[in-house]
Length: 130
Image (tube, rainbow, N blue to C red; front, side, top):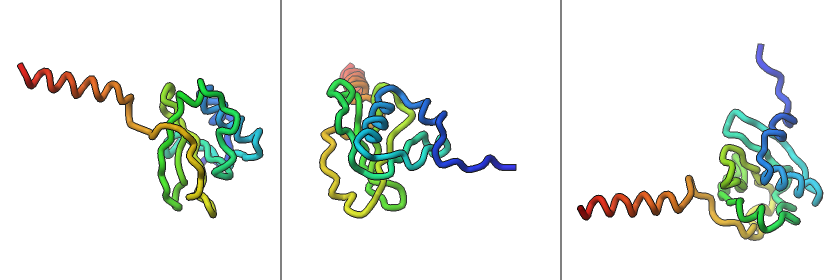
């Protein structure tokens, strides 16, 4: 017997890091709402609308967030990730006019911290000089 499908699970919302919890709470306070949560295809929270989002998120929290553009109507417009706590993300849905989403003023998402990639590249280059 398979588990019953429940679109929004409280345990998924509770598992969000403080930064992404703030993103979701801020979106809800601005009139948006959660449409779905999951932990099977990645770990995500899908908002109902692509905006409002990040209306009153403080700069110290925003500095830990990155944005990954997906731009695929079969999935969603993009994802907001926390660089401090990888694993979960907040998805922005693809809706009519969604491509007109104004800049969220977040850095682009990158797999792993850019500084670690730079350090690795420098170390490899140093080894090559020996």
